[in-house]
Every structure is written in structure tokens, then in C-alpha cells.
Picture 1 (cartoon, one colour):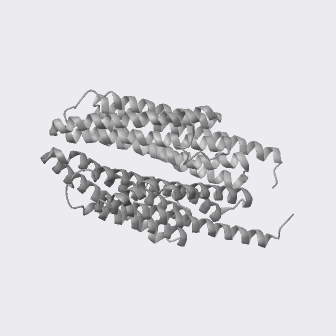
Picture 2 (cartoon, chains in turn yellow, orange):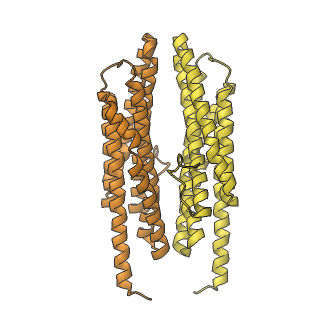
Picture 3 (cartoon, chains in turn cyan, blue):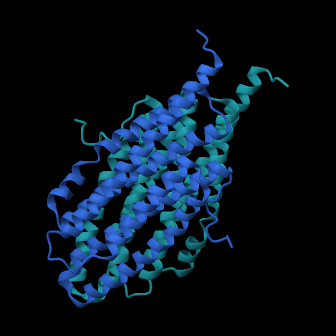
Amino acid sequence: MSEPVERVVRHFQEELEQLKTRLLEMGGLAEENVRLAVKGLVDRDHDLIDRVLVGDEPVNSLHIELDSRCFTLLALYQPMAADLRTIVAVVKINTDLERVGDLAVNIAEAARRYASHAPIKKLIDIPRMASIAQTMLRDALDAFVRRDLALAQNVIIEDDRLDALKTQIFRELLTFMLQDPSTIEPALDLILVSRHLERIGDHATNIAEDVIFIVSARDVRHHAGEGA
Amino acid sequence: MSEPVERVVRHFQEELEQLKTRLLEMGGLAEENVRLAVKGLVDRDHDLIDRVLVGDEPVNSLHIELDSRCFTLLALYQPMAADLRTIVAVVKINTDLERVGDLAVNIAEAARRYASHAPIKKLIDIPRMASIAQTMLRDALDAFVRRDLALAQNVIIEDDRLDALKTQIFRELLTFMLQDPSTIEPALDLILVSRHLERIGDHATNIAEDVIFIVSARDVRHHAGEGA
């Protein structure tokens, strides 16, 4: 029954690589859903919006699959140190990516409502927020796979740009609402979309913090305001 | 160097109990912050609001402590089966509780802005939402500690009541905003509070789903609409 140690180690490393590959696939799907939802909002494209609304099944399947892979790896191989930290990080990142998938659906829901009203304005800052949030997500996952501290730190810095844009969008839309009550309902949906995008940035930030924890075994959370 | 097996097992069980105790403490703190934030909103109590705004340090410390305890338990004892599932669940629940703490702060931020305007209406549904969300959170953690499937399932059912109240609050506030633009800004803050409370319910639901997974080793996620 006993396997040579080298073979067990090789199996483990192969399965760890597969775990990372599947995590990247999930990240790619979640990011693509965000992109399509925002494109559906901007282009008022009902088909695209509907596709996102019914399209989160693959992300949800991967969520369950990845959790199960993590359990199997922990139970079968009882990994230590860096490998243990990596697998526990995948458990967390998996949760973050599943929420990003949910937020893409939330954006599509707001987009559907928004498309039922006359457009308020040309949307510029929301696609800009979406682009920043998507890049943050991609960079956070790249930083995870490449154990790239600098890239992870950059993701955390980018989050401030998202927050600034969210505040700017809110102020602008508030002005619209105060001037013309017929814009209240659609403006509320745009405000919600900006908050969903902000939360996608928060999830990317969580992932970046996990990367810093894995690579440096240092916990950077809850010290945001303390740095120089 | 080697310890008798019984002693190792006893240490592990003691540390697992401590882990659960600390998790419950964290849940209690997060829930209390939600209660205080909503009380601050309803009573327009600036002192209370300020207390919540600066008071999430204990929750954040526990977040880091619990993560570290989980790592130590996984690395030192390499637990199997039910114990492994419990510890991985704590990693996830820990994240949920930390977000609940953040949401209490978000509610306090909205409460501070709301208190700078004339009140729109007597707040009835928001305290009702808060009460449901707090109960869901407490029940989810009780269900975790007592491995109580029925209680966990009840938490998931309660989430529908939160969603219904959120929709009702939104419609009512929209009417206010359309009738009187001076209510737009404060109404937006109440809408945000209702969404923060909805998300607290979502976190309680996540915890309840983890409990069902631990107890029955069955994954109930992403099948919400499929049951009888």
C-alpha cells in the first residue's frame, strides 16, 4: 500500500498546480462576467445582460470544486508551512471569487433596471471603475500564482482610486437627482453599480493581502492606516 | 521529545474548544457593534455612532488571532475528517465575522450622515431588519457550536424575510424621494443601511451553509432554488 515518498510529493505538487490553474480559470470567468455586465449596462444590451444573469453556474461549480480539492489536499497530504498557507489562502480566495461572480450578477440586475429608463448621461466613470476593478482582480491572482509581493502591494494601492471614483460618481448623480426627480430611480441603480464595483476591488484587495501573508508570512490586514 | 498520544489529543481538543470560544466572542462583538450602530441611527446618538466608528479594533484583532490559531492547529495536529472540516469552516466564518464588523462601521458612517439631516420618518423597518440579521448571526454561530442542522436551515430561511424588508424599505423611500427632493440625501443613507443589513444576513447565511457542510458533509451552496 505504501507509495515511494517521491511519488507522493510529485502527486501533491501536481495537484497543487492543478488547484492554482482551476483558481485562475475561476478568476477569469468571474472577471469576464463583470466585464460583460458593465458592457451590458453601457450598451443597454439586453441579451448581454440576460447572459450574465443566467451565467454564474460555471463560477459556482468551480467554487464547490475548489473547496473540495482543498479539503482533499489537506486531508491526504497534510501539507506544512508554505504549502499549508497556500491551500488555506485558496479556500479564502475561492470565497472572494465566488462573491465577485455574485456581484457581476448584481450589476446585471441593476443594468436591466437601468435600461428600462431613459439614460441619464453618457457613462464614463463607471466603465473606468470596472476597468480598474478587473485589473486589480487579475493582478491579485497573478501576484498569487507568481508570489509577487510588489504586484500584490500595488493592488492594495489601486483600491484608493476606486474609492475616489465611487465618491465622485455619487456626488455627480446626487446633483442629477436633486435637479430632476425623474432621474432618481436610474441614478440609484448607477450608485449601486458603483458600490458593487467598489466591492469587487475590496475582494481583489483581500486576495492581495492573502498573497502578502503567504509570501512574507506577515499579516498586513488591519494596518492600512499605519504605514509611512 | 515524543508526547503520549492521549496528551496530544487532549491538547488538540482543548485548543479546538478555545478556538470555538474565541469565535463566539468575536461573533458577539460584531453583533453588538451592529446593534449599537443601528441604535445610534434610530436615536440619532452621535456618541454611540462615534463609538462604533472607532470600535472595530477588537474584532480585527480577533480576526488575526483566529486565523493564526487555525494555522497552528492545522500545522501541529494535522487533523482529519470532522476536525479538519471544522477548522477550515472557522477560517471562513472568521472572514464572515470580520466583514460583519466592517458593515457595522459602514452603518455607523451612514448614521452619522443621516443625523446631519432632518429625520425623514420614524424608523421601524430598519430596526426590524437589524433584529432579524442579529438573530440570524447568533443562531448561525449557535448552530455551528452545537452542530445543529435544523437551526442552520432556519437561518437560511430567515434570509428571505430580510430581502422582503429591504425591497419594502426601498419602495417606501423612493416614494419619499420622488415627492420631496430634500429627502434624497438622507433617504439614500437609509437605503444603504438596509443593504448593509441585508449583507449581514448574507454572512449569517454563509455561516449556516458552512454548518450544514460540516455536519452533513454535504454542500448546500448554489442550490437555493432547487429544494422542495
